[in-house]
Image (cartoon, rainbow, N blue to C red; front, side):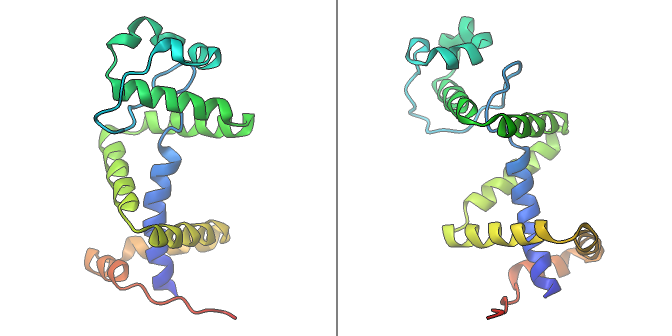
Length: 173
């Protein structure tokens, strides 16, 4: 059972950290990192955005036409997401964005790589990872700390073994 939690906790902590730390939308007062999109993305005309999007991205207006098309698309998409969020979601996203910006570049790169690993998993496996992470998050803080402590004490070989050979979860029903 502990082995399963280690697997789930490690994968989900890595993936969820990336998700939680990665900005969901550009902050109104600062620039978000470019989101990768298809290389053939057509340029997004400034005039094609809503007035709310233009207001949100006003600091980009003068340089909009000189931005790469994929950057324009990412900013437009991010602004749409931002505008569709509730105030609580915006606050949470802004907090994560601030944490992301405070990270050293190496840590951001590591999280990006972990996120790509997560995204390369089959959808069913991604769902299992999300479910495991949610179970982990619902544990009492003391239990989570204990699992983290045990994980840190494992050797790299032990960690690999746990990740590569997760125990089957018993069905309580």
